[in-house]
Length: 212
Image (tube, rainbow, N blue to C red):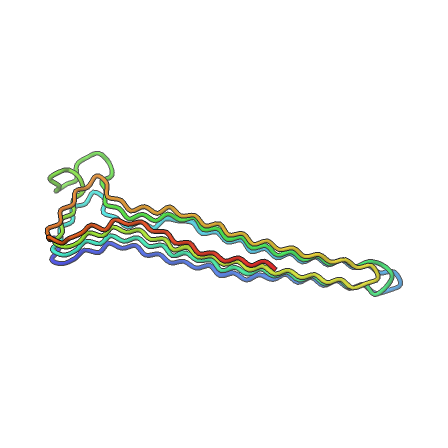
């Protein structure tokens, strides 16, 4: 028994910040000269996991409110830059190529639950299921806020009698979440006349990608 309120909370925040750069310079001088420069920059970030808050096979008694909250706030910030310069000072060719790639992936699961695992009765429970008895409100909420940003830049320059340059970029963001808030195999008793049950699962995803 608790004289007051009960809070069961799992709150996880993780951040990845990466910045990678590749620079390639090639120069050749002479009567017959050729130069080749290639720069490639790659940033790959992945986040996965589970955040869970719950009352499993439990009997909770409180004179106040009972709150079960699971929150997940992962974020990735990645920047990838590639620069290539080729110079030929004679009769010949010069080629410069630059490529930048950034890939961000977030796949997480967030669970807030009142449940009873297994098939045997819960000790101390009249019904055999998990039980919550409160004098105030019951809140079971799961929240996921995912944010990812990817910026990629590539530049190539070539100088010579025969010159060619090329640059390419690619930014990829993949966001996915499983968010569950549940009351299962459980009984809830709220004594207050104005007491409420808030059962809520919410997911918010933000992404920004720029490729130049």
